[in-house]
Image (cartoon, rainbow, N blue to C red):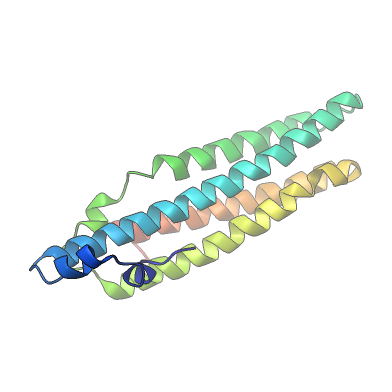
Length: 171
């Protein structure tokens, strides 16, 4: 996952020259933060979308085997995933006010980056568990309940992230 600090390494000659223009450095750094933030949220959304394929595969297996008792629970998980995906994707253009600040609170940015790294790990662990769902047909209620609990935790962490970016709290 790219970090805003990494952009300095990949800077082209024109950007390096423009950094000497008063005010441009702050603009460029804000753009790097926006880009990294967007890439991070794209990654989260892509991973969660990938987990939906496994959920859909399990649902197909259950329908094919006429084992429909667990379908409402699976559907509830799919709805929760869709809602979480919508929140993450819907935030893609958000938080511009946070990144437009002339004076950026560097400790807060570090807290946000650390928070995002732990959120990435949670989403990755969720996706890995979800991808094992089709192999757990005989354990559907327990497996889905565990994944719903993980979705709860990811949503809680996403709420914390939003609060951090609004200046309401920290992770």
